[in-house]
Image (cartoon, rainbow, N blue to C red):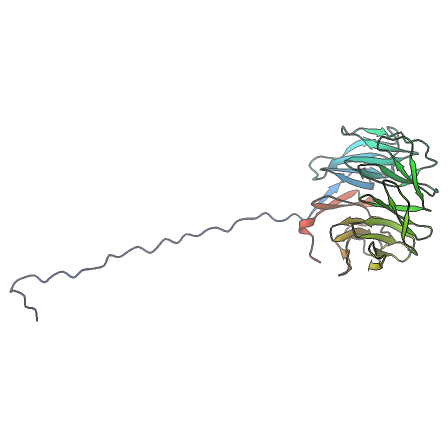
Length: 319
C-alpha cells in the first residue's frame, strides 16, 4: 500500500496524443481514347480499282482517270491523270514501291511527283487484262490471248512465261499463280523463269486468286465458293460458300478478304484454315468491288456509292 502526504497533489496520469487519420490518396483512372473502327472516305467518282502504297490511296474510275488521296483522309482527292492525258487507266496495281495501271495496249506508271506516264510496252496484241507486279517485273495477260507475259519495270518488249487460256493472276513471293477460267487448271510459274507446274485442276470458273507461303486461294463464280489448295500435298478444301461476284481475293495473315453482292452485300473475312464461318464486316456497302490492305487497315471501295471505307484491323470483331 502506498501512502501520500496530506495535502500533496496526486500525480497526473499520462495521456497518449491523438493523431489525425492517415491521408487517403486516390489516383484517377487513366483515360484511354476509344479505338476508331472505321473511316468513310467520300470520293468524287466511282472507283474501279484500288491500291494503297505507303500512306496514299490510288484508284481509277470508269472514265479512265487516276486519283489519289492520303489514306487517312486528311486531304481531298486529287486527280492525277485522265483518258486524254497519258492514257485511259483500266486497272491499278502495285509493283514494289511503284504503282502502275493497265491501259490501251500499254501500261501507265505513276511517278513520285504524281505524274502519270506511258510505260512504253511494245508488241501487245490487244488490251492487257489481268495484271500483277513485284520489285522485279510486271505480269500480264492479254484480252482473248493465252500468253502470260513478264514486262520490265521500265517498259519495252514482254517475255512470254507460259500459255494459260483466260488466265487469272495471283502473285506471292517469286511464284505467279495462274488459274484458267476456261478449263479450271491452276499452274505455278516461277517469275525468274522456268517451266509452269500444274498444281490443281477442275476448278469451277475461277475469277480471283491469292496466295501465301503454304496455299493458294481461288474463288469460283459457278459454285460461289472459295477454295484453299495446299501447296504441300495439293489438297483442295472449300473454306467459304454462298459468295456472289467475289472477284477480288487478298491474303493477309490468317485471313483472306473478299466481298459479296446479292441480298447481303459487304466485305467478307474468311479464315484460311476454315475453322469458322466467313464473317461479313460491313452491311451498308451496296456494290463493294476492290480491296486493298496495309499494316493497320483494310480498305474496300463501293462503286455505286462513290466511297472508300477504311476498317482498322485492331477494331475488327473477334471470330
